[in-house]
Length: 459
Figure (cartoon, rainbow, N blue to C red):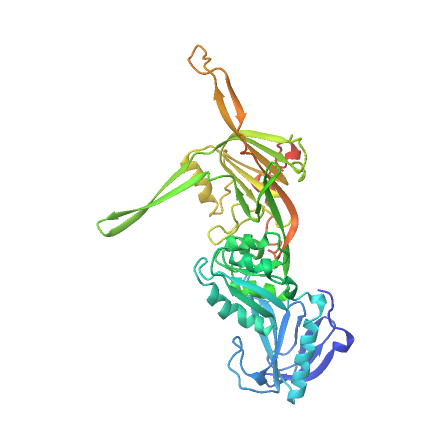
């Protein structure tokens, strides 16, 4: 982060931390403190950069939720910053400083707030927040009030909170809301709400609800406190958006996973002995699709051009899935598309060819394990910028050969059923820090992803 404090913002004073004197400085890039008792326990220098610092408050107003038990003391102030808690989780931390009088403490608080309000840090100051009270595990309101709201208060972020009451409630509000008053509309709740808010509306989004695939794929965790801290710091990642068309007609947006049709149905029943539950019984029905998958690296191939030539894969497919992100979650730590990258302008297209129910379940089960779910003969993976699926109908006439089989068969395009999907690169911003490169392995070779331009050769 570039320096955000000018020379007039810099400050230096001797303050006490736990009754020990420290030389405290506000420099051009950080707030640091150094012990003046080099032989005492905990001696040494510490500090935090402005990119990690998010608040400061005087103890004159009493205790905040995240502070330890304290007495009201106008001579004391605290600073707030983030610190890594676990692999992808962050937690707020604070240090309290004791000054000689309340005017000194208030001077430091005001100076820190001035630095944090500078435009270079790109911190949001006003938010519009939608909470779906019945989404997922129905914990959205309690999570917000217990976790997010106190942090927003510490960071001086004003929030206009709306509890959605019906379908399309958030959309209807946004259509009339003056978005110039807010720095971005984050979201708390279902994936459905996440998708609705994107429809033609600018701004930032944060997924902190029970639909954790987006949160895990962009931050590595579904932890709501981490999500709130990312919002406060203004961390953002640029996401790709896919559009789905039928000819020249726009159908829908795709922000994470796109599947063609309803290829698989799962029937779950229970088995009892009297009143005693024994087990679940699972049955899977899949009829699949027969047609052509046309892969193309030019994202505008089907946008106004009649020529749809490309790399054609014909076959019977049980599932046709397109992943703009890995879609990680608690049950699938790497996600069904582990190699999918955020904001690269591509989608990982996973084709499941017609196979037995047992084999299809084997693929699904591997998605939850460390075993490669793509190392199966009926699974193909391609990285493309656009693709089209054209369902075909098989037709036969009455001509038969000597064995009695139809000898004159042909495939006809099923009218109106073709779908085109195009990826638009980095058109949506979301509050998140992204997943560290050290955690996200480049597994192209491992997964055997293929580009159409390589004529079917493994990457």
